[in-house]
Amino acid sequence: MREIARRAGVSCATVSRVLSGSSLVREDTAKKVRDVVSEAGFIPNPSAAMLKYGRSRTYGLVLPDLQNPFFGEFVGAFEDLLIDIDHEVLPISVQTSDKLVKSVRRMLMRQVDGAVLVSSEFDTGAVEPLLLRQIPLVTVDRRSVQVGCSDVSIDYERGFVEAVLHLKSLGHKRIGYIGGTKGPHTSEVRANAFEQAIRGAGLVFYPGLTRRGNYQVTGGEAAVMSLMKMPAPPTAIITANDLTALGAALGIHRLGGVVPRDLSIVGVDDLFLSEVVQPPLTTIRIPRKRLATACLQAMNYTKQNLERIGAEFSVPTQLIVRESTARPKSAPKKKSKR
Image 1 (tube, rainbow, N blue to C red):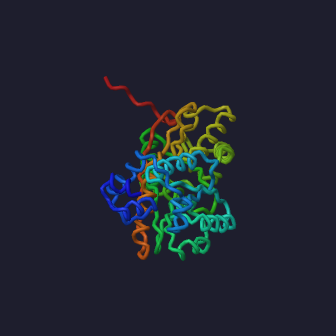
Image 2: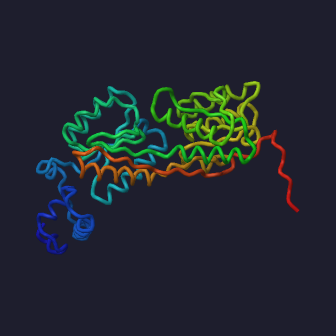
Image 3: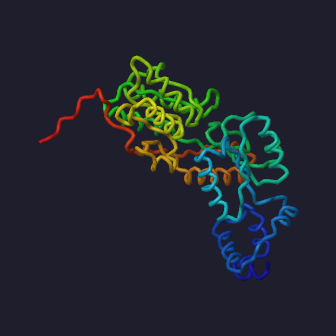
């Protein structure tokens, strides 16, 4: 440690703080120490650090579904950031309150330095043991903060406005929506963003053109078949996520139709799959790297302000126009300019 301190031009105490993950060291100084450690090939003993400082250099990451490609990509982006600061991630998939309680116990046993909860649906009491031990928390899309807990929200409102205006510019007036499962806060946020975007664009919001999905391909397929059997079906739909959109496209194919000739489809997420399917999917991009960066920024803020109300961070969205949207069959073709 003395050699590392000498090379970095700092004290042994500073080196110790950096290796233990302390937030009391300036980032430029911490980086200098980490660079020297890397060059020297020194490997810190995580078990020793845990025993001495009560830290594991690990962040818990609670997600609703690790099988969903979006969350898998997000874990990868978050892990890349943690590698740069010599931390690791403990990913946990949670679908029920009971499993969250068990996961909190697991994180306490691992002595995590903090926890990020991407699932917006959880009993506040379940995470109380983390807050009581002053373990900083970051939630995603819960859209509320408290002492020791910050929140990162995704700007769905902007994305849905862009998507609706895009469809309106193509001539669509009957725009439907396939949402997520009933109950989760994020499902309601996206559904409300859709309705507000429709009304804000001066279009008619048709409640009968909305369906519940399950964030999976199966839900999108079943919902679109229900919509297309209506006497006056929508000419375009926006879905709660890309998997639902891919399911809707499959449903149109099974009905003998073609996307976007018979139905324009817009998803949310911008998965890798969305670029390679035919036709490539128009979608509202949620940038995984920016989301991961915002979560880490929120975590650093919360660690340094544990006695204060947490801060709110926001991640922008962006409409990515591909080939799954086009003018509806009923719309008159634009006259070519001469």
